[in-house]
Length: 335
Image (cartoon, rainbow, N blue to C red; front, side, top):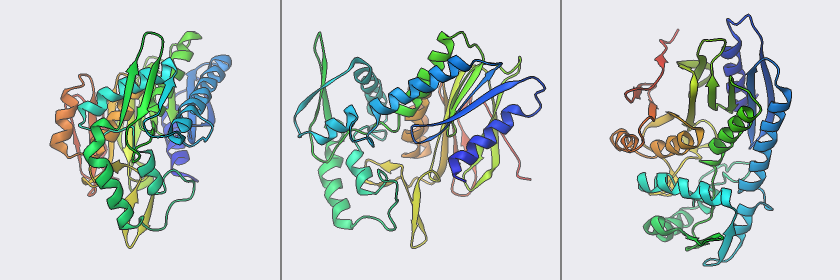
């Protein structure tokens, strides 16, 4: 059983426990993970429309699909201008706000670095890539992170240019959050007022569960069957977790995970096992959780100050936790 599937089952069990009325739950595979949509009562057409919207975005924003618009940009020549549809252009513009605020710790240009580390493949590496290749990327890319690509806005179109061959577009740290938000928007357009969309542990809730908050469990990074914290969310709230347990390989006793630090070109090593972010939308929470994983606690708290209404929970390698003021959650004592 995959870790994301286990996380999903754990969340669904928390949602259904203690509830005598019916929560309808539907699960499908989208964006490389199991996505669960839970609603109060039956809303079959709305749920299917929400899944269809996530499927559309998967095709549009994927850097894994060789036929996607993003992949065609990555396959093009450096310094070539590529037209963008309005939706992708606006997503990139919003992403650049967080990229700039995080001093490039969240970065949308790491496609080739992820390729180098094998995280664009279904089969992970068995050992790190050769040191000269890593050094080559670092020397070429790290000094140029701020100018990895350019956006040009004209009255009738927006175009993008990759400025350096070390970079390629990878929206994986923001696209899933955006897809969750779009699924919520589709549900609302169909009249659904109370629901939760959960994509492998990244989620957004609207309304409540029969007048009570949606109870969300935060997974123990070291034990997929255990919950270490609990959050009761209602109204309109998102929570996304980035962790070193999602995609990784072990070499000579060391864990190499998929959350790459743009400053070093290596898996981020700031002592975190997971970082969970709560925000008004899943897109922002998605990008910020990645950024916070690639910086220390003081830097992370300064970044959060730039995004009012966003809070975070950090879990370190020893299982200890820190949380920012306002984080909705209760740390659970190990049994």
